[in-house]
Image (cartoon, rainbow, N blue to C red; front, side, top):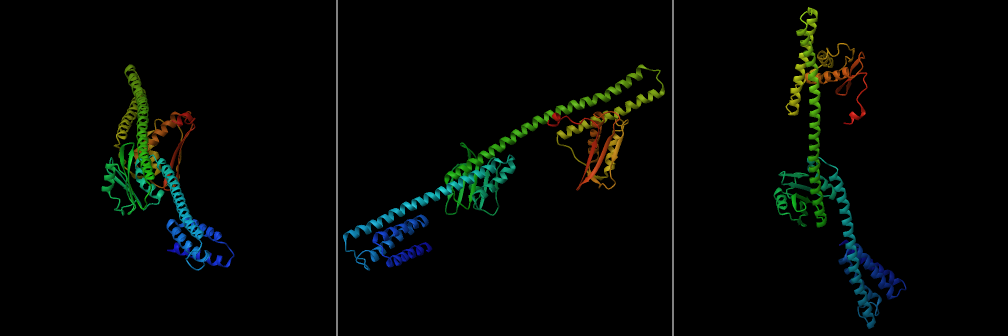
Length: 415
């Protein structure tokens, strides 16, 4: 109603202005025609045609002789009046068409921009579960919708932006996925899009709050289907790569364990051979060799236990027994297990008394420290000290072991 009032008011103002000015009918007609074109481009065909009819009547009544009557004396004025009315209506239709095409072009441009934004978001996530949960939110935010829902028959699950939108029912989503047909309800502003890779159905997508063009809906469906397939392929590739790396790590650990087994076995074998081949050895020598056998047997037993723990870790059967311990207690447990290896080493402890207690599995953490201490002893020059230090880090404690060795080669750090 507002548009019609403004249009009629414009015609009235022009009539009042031109009645006071010395203008000819041609100028008035062109001005009225210009007003009709502007209104058609601004508010559409209906307002423009109404304005054209009112302008024709005003032009006839006020500017074509005889004035102040709808009678036309000169037949040429009939032709001029009809030409004006026809020109106004035709021009209105052309202006309306141009306006409609401009609006469609703007709408398509915005949809393309939103599709691009959506594609960037879909390609940014490789985690399948995170992507599936995020897709409805991405689509809703990209197109300014009330809600969105996605159904995947392979997973038998529906992913939603919220639970308070019964219009996007699971039954309707499943039906669209099965039929593979686009469904648009303009009255309720609902759209249901099948997700397909070629002709293979992947699922369906439901949108509420706007009616998008068929081209945009099909593009959204294809983008989502491709992103789901891509994320699945990346996840499969990642698992395969992780399996290969796990196999490489298992082989490396097996080689390491084999080497570790040989060291105590060699010491035990040498001690036993010496005892058997040298019967006249004194009691002090026998005691020393038996001590070596005893210590290396304990070490061998520990290695067997570690190998069993590795098998449990690989089978995901490891259980942690966490309790609260002082940091010094953990370090002392590790030093006790490594006392033979560190017999000729100076071990410096930098453990402040203010360290908070830690909740850990004592045996596991002690094993970690033992491995670090053994590496420090093996790969640092003999006689150099090994330093064990700890410091608080928020709610945690940083524990470090430092030696005077060359460190890990840069090439090996990148592996």
